[in-house]
Length: 194
Image: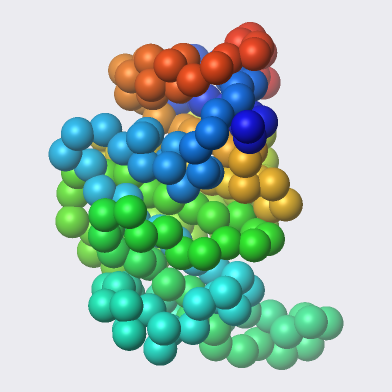
């Protein structure tokens, strides 16, 4: 049995709902179960975590993706280099193999324009590592806007893919809670957010 910690952050409320549960499912099976009808899952993989599956391997598996180029400061911040992140398009039951790092899954009913996505993620998460970590644990702030109103997203813990946070509107959060409560829930509690 796997021990899972799920943190759900309904954006309209200043609270986080935590569920600790056990399951036989793989982490990615849980992410798949959390996909509501008519939704697809886009996977945003930062350049630093692209070592698990090369682009040539994605191509061989016929996985479609967008390359998102960005400037990144070098180690000591003295210069910049261009790096490539990937936005993997929805494909049933395909998940980029993970090891360490934040993995960002966007659940949406809409076709995502890569340029709009890149602009959105850069505005909402300008400091990816820190912002993903904060959002995972504490949810979004009152100025947050989704790419589309009915979107929701899941961010995994940097070291433990079995710990994840979901930000969604309250209606979607309630639907996801129904799904998660079907697992062997050990604890459920709510915390007020700042």
